[in-house]
Length: 319
Image 1 (cartoon, one colour):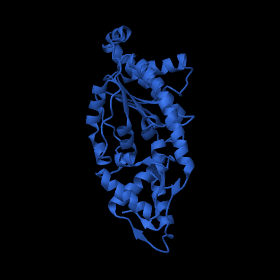
Image 2 (cartoon, helix red, strand yellow):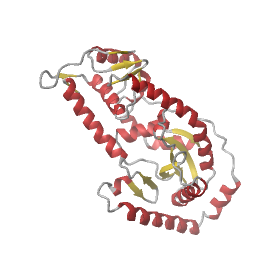
Image 3 (cartoon, one colour):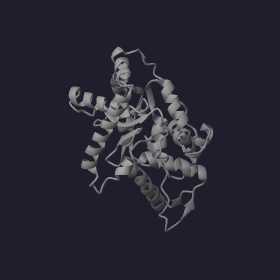
Image 4 (cartoon, helix red, strand yellow):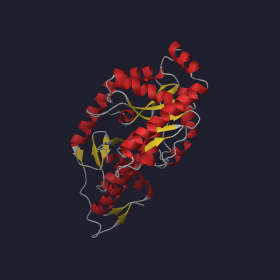
């Protein structure tokens, strides 16, 4: 059942100012409102940009509810008075739970490839939901100076054995172990990093998180996830290939795959006015990023729009 108070008038009729903590809660809900994703109180606490106790948060939620600025649907909170949102979220959560065994299976397969050091789940699945047309996104850490060999072999596997399907095998972000720091420091990347689910090599995951402690500036309340204990068995073929390409031949091959990929992506995307090639397509020695749809940029822009719309339609300005 949905319950809510009448909303205040428009900004030009009466302007009010929310205090800092109330604004933080609203901005958290606004961010996930972009994805039509209601949040539980525990999730709001996790993704808030300021330290809050759970008791403080509950008081803030009650205050915002009484002001008619948020809605409560079951155990979740939203800025929309729409019961179907929580229903869709529950369906997506059930789908995510069903798909996780496949994510673990493919993570294990990825871990068998040479120079793979860590495999983490990212994207919507890392937040406990998956839409019907959603993919399983992987964030992969590789050995130093062998990222492009690793990526090329995984892409070849996907094209040959999975018929280039992205459904269970979406490989869009690689970093090597010598440069684990993510350069884009904003609320989007902070949420993505803090939501990662490590499925292979928890020590590698801890090293990655250590190099990205800046996320706590955006999300001070997050806690480390429980590690799914994978079976990290020694793979003979992987060890053999790593040994074969641990020399100058391997470095030359790595650079060759990098050049080929750069040439292909440049030809495909460089002329597109819709894509900021340097930001959305990265081909570096230690980073491979493939986000041609400008998703991060669009989300951050949409967040600014959501804030402006909220202030205009409610008459409450966010501090």
